[in-house]
Amino acid sequence: MEKAEGKLYYSGYEIYVVDLPGIYSLSALSIEELIARDYIASEKPDIVIDVVDASALERNLYLTVQLLELEAPLLIALNQVDFAAKRGIRIDVEALERELGVKVVPTIATTGYGVDELVKAVVSFYEEGKPSGRAPRYGREVEEAIEAIEKELSNVTLGELERFPKRWIAIKLLERDSEVWELLSKQPSCDAVFEAVAKWSQKIESMHGERAPAIIAAERYGFITRVVERVQTITTPAKPSLSEAVDELTTHPVAGYLILACVVAGIFAAVFEGGSALSAFLESVLSGWLLAARQWLLSILPAWAVDVLIDGVLTGFVAGLVLVIPYVLPFYVILALLEDSGYLPRAAFLVDNLMHKMGLHGKAFIPLMLGFGCNVPAVMGCRIMETERERFIAGLLATFVPCAARTVVILGVVGRFLGLGWALALYLIDILVVIAVGRLAHRVAPGEPMGLIMEMPPYRKPSPSVVLRQSWLRTKDFLYIALPIIVLGSSFLEVLKVAGVIDQASQAFAPAMSAILGLPGFAVVPLVFGVLRKELALVMLVEVAGTTNLSLVFTPSQMVVFSLVTMLYVPCIATVAALFKEFGVGKAALITATNLLVATALGASSFRLMELLGFS
Image (tube, rainbow, N blue to C red):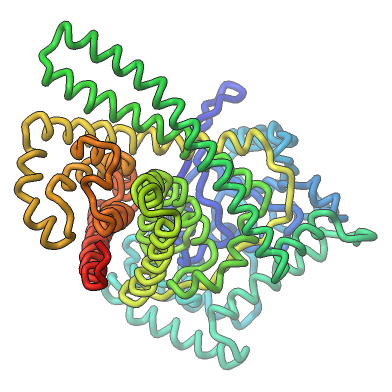
């Protein structure tokens, strides 16, 4: 939901490009919409390029109409004209320009067709002056209401709303736009404005038999319908297209779920199995490099400094790379493929009912699914949720999904020594925890859940360049933000280890560890290092235990409790970094504290229950 920024050089000009979040309106229903409209109103860009899907003209022009209301310097890129033509849709570009008073350039983004003409139009408008469209006019009684409210707005101080046109503010007041109402209510002497809004809202509502926001939306769509009738012709294809046939199959109430299961299984097989193999290979290669670096540094530095540099700084850097390349990057590539092909909205539609039980909607399935590979892309994937409330709940639940590194611990301890059945039981417990925490968060989090509002784009062949670009942009976020924090966190833990703090902590926490979780005191060390990377919990456990046969130092119940706590407690430092970046310090701390509380409570309960049942 952030802005992507860049520069291009064309015809002697340096053009600064800002890619705003993808939206369908300028209402206050989502964070993306607020970001986009605030940027356009505050930053006053020279040109606003509205990318309109030629195959869905009527739906896409809704945003265009709102941009005209906002008096944005508008230029339309009429995209996917090739796909529209395949569906029998023909658009008279010159007629569309006349109807809207805006320059329209046909484009095909995947091939680059029309992009040069689009940039030429941008330069031309900059040289000749900003383009101006015609703000649409609506029905007589609605126009009377807008003009009356505009008149009252001229007599008051608008504060932060001064950056918006008065006509736009009047329309938003009639629409009950929450942000506009809140900003205006902070200004003194605005009672006359609100009285005018109430009076005219009541008048048009009584005439139309609908609420004012619905009336405004209907007026916009009425305008759009008239425009589309004049500029668009459709020739119905003789038979359904392949895209429509696949669409029907993937949303079928039976076949759709079978396909979804196959897609999820395929993702796990490709990323988990492939990622595990690649991770092991990279780790073996880099471990040799680290060993050589240690030997060289020992010849010139004290041992404690080498420990900090190698086990802290360099090992943290290597750990980040071993996480990014095998797991994060492939997941982002697959995610981009699913996005660009048009399948993800279908998957979200299928699981919408289940997600609603946790106060979310179907799109939350996407980041939760990512969590099985790595919690970092899962947390960052929560950006697709519309509101802060839903982002927070989805981010909270994503941290409880057992990632590949947690799976290593579960299978390496419980799976190996107690059997696969016990390992699967832990996964079942985790699913129940996700559902329970989700339902609780749904009840206590302020705000109301939103329904699933998602475009079902037609299926299309993914563009390799788009997939690679999207994958790199997302991976770059991790490399620039999370990787430095991993290195710092690893270094800090190693300093604590060299200083003897870790050993002292083990001794200090041993009584509490035994009393609450029934674990031996040395279990503190692997749990602490598990914060850096979850699989380090298993590595450090073997080190402090002095054996790979954990049945010699752990009872079966202790194996279950250790694996359960590791599966649920504080996420790894890379995930914490992602939480800080996405939600800020306060919410990241709350999510982390919730993980720790749930893990401790469930671990203690499991210990007591197994003790009661005589399972030891």
